[in-house]
Amino acid sequence: MTMVKPIRSDARRPLLEVRGLSKSFGAVPVLKGVELDVYEREVVSIIGPSGSGKSTLLRCLNRLELPSAGHVRLEGREAGTRSSELVRLRRRIGMVFQNFNLFPHMTVLGNVIEGPVTALKMPRAEAERLGLSLLEKVGLRERAASRPAQLSGGQQQRVAIARALAMRPTLMLFDEPTSALDPELTGEVLAVIQQLAEEGMTMLIVSHEMAFVRRVSDRIVMMDHGEIVETGPPDEIFARPTTERTRRFLASFER
Ligand SMILES: Nc1ncnc2c1ncn2[C@@H]1O[C@H](COP(=O)(O)OP(=O)(O)O)[C@@H](O)[C@H]1O
Ligand SMILES: [Mg+2]
Image (cartoon, rainbow, N blue to C red; front, side, top):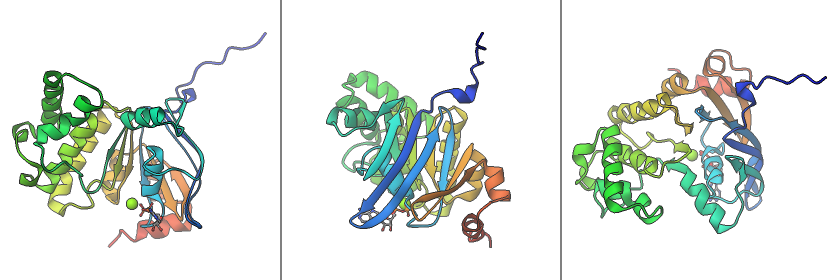
């Protein structure tokens, strides 16, 4: 008689599966066979030196870059090259960049509802209700009628987060979301991201804010020269890094 194996929670299929992902620009390899799983409700942070391929990895996940080799599966479905698959993928993955990238000629609310109205064909009234509730969530409901240029960088980035959330993504990618901000404005953006983590949003975060990364992440991925050098729970990576490259990288943040 065969035993029925109990279903363990870690036996779930990952939300995001990255297999053998490689990317070269011309003859220069920038990603070399990256393997990564991200489970639902997991917060994974990618750290590593400048030029190690962190942004390229995120951009390959939502096909802003076309990988040279390898596979990306989201919710069990292969991210192929057909345009219908691309559209689906981009809707399911929200991305927040370093430089906000808001539409300057639109109001704050207009920026947030643009995706739902044009891509999802959501009725405007419904989109506005959604948009206002998301602006409330990021603490900017009263700025709905402002233009991006009237806001601080921290406020603009919070609008960018609300705009990404408006598409109801299954996965959120953050690429150095506070790197363009003055130090006094980073906290308000990190607080919003932390709140999302507490609510169970699945997130992949590239950040150099080491205290934040340690606090908010379930798992850390250390990259160098296009490879994952080391991965583990934050307390292990920060307290007991197993590779010299990670040790050296983390030491560069100590003063
Ligand atoms: N579009 C591109 N064309 C050529 N080289 C690129 C391009 N984008 C990134 N690179 C190179 O790929 C490497 C990794 O870049 P990137 O992914 O931005 O690293 P990180 O985000 O870790 O700083 C760098 O050497 C960078 O110069
Ligand atoms: Mg980068």
